[in-house]
Length: 548
Image (cartoon, rainbow, N blue to C red; front, side):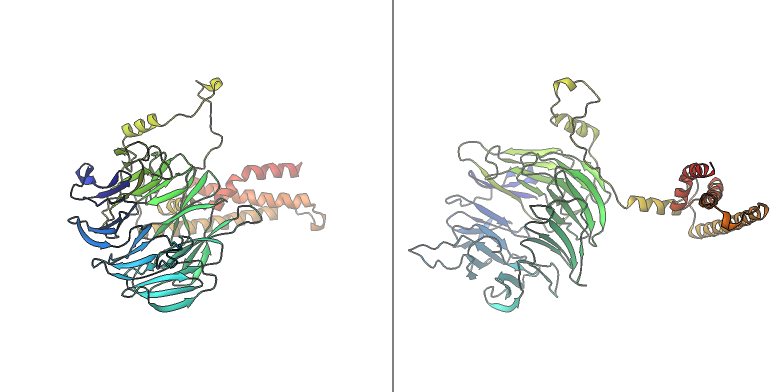
C-alpha cells in the first residue's frame, strides 16, 4: 500500500495508490479552520497535521487519533528518527498585551502528548530545527558560537557545550555510536551534506576577482581520517544542487553557468560519469539509488533525464513543465510532479509518472477564486524493493517525441532539412574512465573470433612476446652498427646541425620500421608506440627538407 497526502484550500485528503488512486475514506480529518501543514513520520506509521485549532497525530494503521497537541498555528513540524517525539515551530510574536509569549519551538512526547519543554527562536526561520542522532538518544542545537547537546528524555536540559568560533551550521552523521558531527562556518553562504564518515561542504564568496556574484567551491571531507579535498568541477559558475545516493556510494552535483553540467562522483571524489550539459538545476536519486533524475525546474521548462546509475545509460527524457514539487515514490519506479501555490497559483494539481516517462495518473486541482493546492507528499517506507530497470518501448518513445512542442522555425527555413535552429550545442555525456578501460580491455581480452585465454596462457603469451621484442631490438641494433661501419664517417668537427638532425630522424624512422613489423606479426603495441607510427609521415617530410 502506497499512500499520498494532498493538502489545499479544499481540505486535507489521503489517496491509496494501490487501489487505483482512490481516496481513503477511513481518514476523516478534523479540518477546523483549514489545514496548512502536515508531516509523515520517518517510518510512515504516524501522520501529523495542524488545523489552526490544534495539532493532531494519527495512527495510519487504523486512522485513529493518537495525540492532540495544543499548537494552533504551527509553521513547521519535525519528527525524531524513531517517531517518539514531535517538534513544532510557530512564529515568535511580541505584542503589548503579551510581551513574553514564551517558547515558539516545543517538544512533545508521542503518543502521550506530554510537553517536554521548548525554547525561543527569534528572527530568521533558518536554523530552528534540532538535529537528532540516528537512534534519537541525543539532539544538537546551535546557539550563537556554541553547539549544545541534549538528551532524549530532557530536550531542553544542556548536557554538553562545545564552543566553535564562526560556526554557521552543523550536521549529525547517520549511524551508530561513536557519533560524528560536522561543523562548518568559514564562508558567508554555506551548505553541508553528511553521509556516514563522508562530508560535502559547499562554500560561497560574496564577490571574487572573476565574478561580481562570487564563486562556489565544493569540498569532500573524511570524518574518520580528517582528510579533505576539493571536488573537481569541470565548469565555472554556481552550484545549484548536490545530492548523495541513499547508500552513500555516489553523489551528484549540478553546477556551472547555463547550460549547466551534471557530474556523478564516487565517495572518494573521483568522477564516475559526466552527464554533459543542459537546462537543469536539480537532481534526485530514487530510494533504491538505482535511478537518477536530472531536471530543470523553477524558471526552466521542466526537461528531465532519467539515468541508470550503475550502467550509465539514459533511460528516458520526460518533461514536467511548471513543476514546483518533485518526489520519488517509495517503490522507486514512479515519481510525482506537482504544481503548487504560492509558487504558481494557476494550473495547480499533481501527476504520477513511470520512470519511462509514461503518465500513470493526472489529478488536476479544482479551479476557482482562492482555490489552491499547497502541498503533496508520499508516505515514507523504510523498506525498499529492488527492481529490474528496463528501457521504454519504441511506441512510447515515438509517442513522447510527437507530443513534445516543436521549436519556432522562421519562414525562410521551413521545409529545409539542413536548417539548425540551435544557438549552441550541449556537451554530450561521457565516461572519463572509458579510454583507460579500453586500453586495459585491449590487453586482457582476446581478439574477436579467438577463444578466451586462461591466466597461465596469457602469462606465457606475454613472456613470448617480450622475448621476441628483445630479439628484434638486438637484431636492429646490430644492423645499425653494421651500417655505421660500412659508411665513411666525416669528422665530427665538420658535421653541420642539419646532418646531426637528419641522423636523429633516421634513427626514429628505423625504430618505426621495427614497430610496423611487430604490428604485421599480430603483436599488440602500447599507446605511445602507436603514436610513434602515426608520426612517420611527418618525420619523413622533415628529413626530406633537411636533405634538400
